[in-house]
Amino acid sequence: MVERLSWKKLVGELAFFYVPWVIVGYLFDALWPLLFLASFILLIWHLHNQIKMSRWLHEGRKATPPSASGSWEPIFDETYRLQKRHKKRRKELSALIRRFRQGAEALPDAVVVFRHEGNIVWCNSLAQSLLGFRWPDDSGHPITNLIRTPDFVQYLMAQQFDIPLDMPSPINTDKTLEIRIVPYSDGEFLMVVRDVTQVKQLEGMRRNFFANVSHELRTPMTVLRGYLEMSEDPDMLVGPMWNRAHGVMTEQLSRMEGLVEQLLTLSKIEAAATSQLEDHVDVPSMLDILEKEAIALSGERNHSIRFDVDPRLKVLGDEDQLRSAISNLVYNAVKHTTDGADIIVEWQATNLGAKLSVKDGGQGIEPQHIPRLTERFYRVDKARSRDTGGSGLGLAIVKHALSHHDSQLEIQSQLGKGSTFSFVLPKKLILK
Image 1 (cartoon, one colour):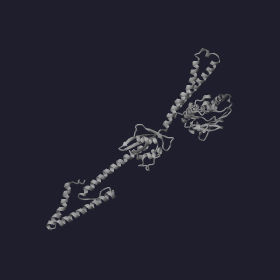
Image 2 (cartoon, helix red, strand yellow):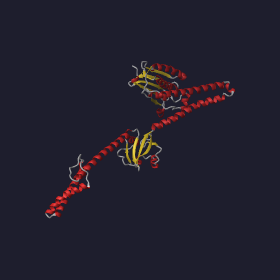
Image 3 (cartoon, helix red, strand yellow):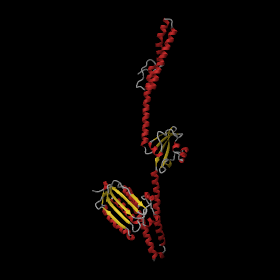
């Protein structure tokens, strides 16, 4: 290892260089000219080493420093060791930054780092899809130039980041974003953006669910309370009035019972495991029973009901869930199809799997209603549904039951020509 440069070494080196020149100068009586010549040579030597160092630092990036002697040797050596130390630190810092960015990219949220004045420092790829940022093109741009929503600008200016901000996505107003901002480093902030669209929708569905349940139960309970209050008068319990009251109360109780039963069925299906599809389900026998029940339910409405069933087509699945799904489709067709219309139920094998379809020749459904038909308590015609005893839960039960069987409900409808409700169970569930 080269000895560290010191005053003692530097003075010794100068003395070792100048002493021979001084002796020769005294001997030949030319001291000052020789000292000047020696100083000039020493200056040239120092300039030469400076040029070597400058070239090494600026151009070379060599693994080892250039050869040097005298006082320049420890300078080159110390510079080289500092370079190695800084290079190691740069590698560690680069690795740390790389791990941070990899971690930020793995997050399910958009991450943006920006300075106190609002200029963007860095963002992950999810910020590009949620906020429309372009990286690295947007580096250094003010964040308010890219997110111009007034609520966000006001939130940023207020500097009150204790409460997150909910706002529409700047590139897709159908999405709701939750924005949280926290101090990140000196003069910088970290913004975390999460897509909470589904959470907000679920909250809305939960509120609507409780509101609808309360509304559905309130009507029959009000009717029952009214007749019970009337029954306090003994004169009301005689004659035709009691027969009418008894019939209405029985009807409302049946309605409440049906609603609670469907709520329990829906809850049971939602809580059921999706992997337990071990029952051998005899769908043809199930449809044979449903055909008789459909004819009885139709009664005097004169529907033309036809079942086209492959008697050999049986499947694996959850028998209770499939019975709930299929019976709801068949009962809905009978209840909500106009009198005298055709109802065709088909159960056949296709290239994709086992297909069940329920087709009716009724009034049809307007296109804007179709995407919402499987929502709980959603009705196209609320008055007609109540007249037929509909709760608005049937298709929600169908949707969840089919999702447990890797299938989904398909709805096709045309006004004035009828509707078709169908689903396909995958081939892996067909019993050979």
